[in-house]
Length: 76
Image (cartoon, rainbow, N blue to C red; front, side, top):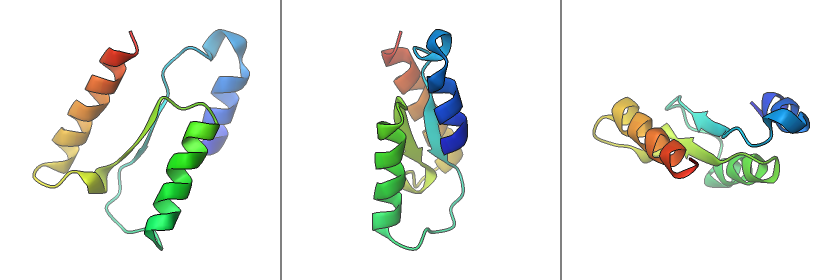
């Protein structure tokens, strides 16, 4: 994800395209600090946002999809 983000943001003609990083697996990372580091790295590399499926409880896939749609709507 980071390498792809880096490549996209390196191209002048692609820089303005919204790039949302997503963690779509529910397996836990070693710690909350690891998730924070991923979010920080996404921001530092120019991502529009980072979303984590673990943040959504009732219907994670649907909720995360809606969150991504809202983020993309804000970037227009």
